[in-house]
Amino acid sequence: MSETRGLPPLDWLRIFEAAARLQGFSAAAREFGLTQAAVSQRIRNLESWLGRDLFVRSARGVTLTYAGEGYLPLVQDALSRLERGTEAMFGTAPRDMHISALSSHLDALVLPALPEFTYAHPNVQVVVDTVPQRSNFEQDRTALQLRFGRGDWARRKAALICKEELAPMAAGQDNREWPEIAGIKLRGERPGWRDWAAVTGYPAPAQDRLSVDSMQHALSAAAAGGGVALGSVALARPHLEAGRLRKLALPSLATEDGYWLTWPEDEFRAPKAQQMLADFTTALRGSVGTIE
Image 1: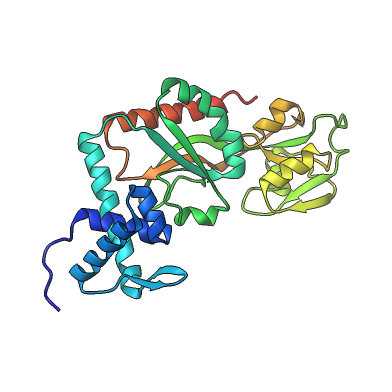
Image 2 (image 1 turned 90 degrees about the horizontal axis):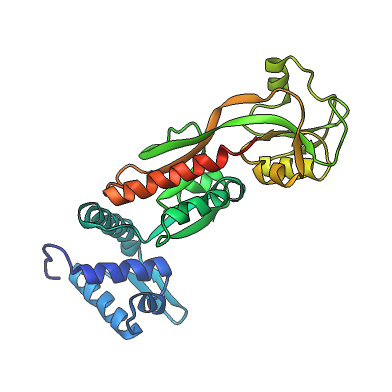
């Protein structure tokens, strides 16, 4: 095997990354507007250059070899850094903006902010991706992410959109007052009814007829008449504005957590990208600010 020096052509690396990411030579060919034979030839050229097979070919398609699995993250990181660096130095206004968030956060916080943002940036396409659960954020490759917590994520910058505020809520058509309505218990990290009672001095609901594991389910259950929930004011926005939920005449509870717009610390350095990020942050905050 002959010794290789320097770097293989960038074109080969980009096609390798696409074929690995899309799990097929045909899909990579469609992405680059090439024939499958042209993609296959470039992959062969790269393998010859490296002296190692990167894919296992079979009748069912292609899969990465151990060498390919090890090489892929290195190539993806290098291409991403090159793209970001080029954009930071020579970039024009971004043409699209990708953001990922939990489904309930998209509905209550992101989507209501888009009209204001798209009015200011009519040529920017907004691409929204749903993250199934919070643990998936670490594997999610979307640059902009809306997260819940305290703003301290490694290697990511964060801008606070709003702090979490919890308030007793019941169905809009339920005219009963406290403490006639049974409580809905929310399991998890957020403060619960005992914490609310300790801070406000009001008694907690006498009984919990329903126990759920997500704020989204707690709000939906309360809106359906299932009881009173200690609901997130920010996430209850669609229900409150539509009249499906109403806040009871009781004190709310401020928390240490909040909703943050986050991004990798080495992205959004170009002036126009920074302006787009600032405008989107303003739109998110303005939309949340209309909640009463």
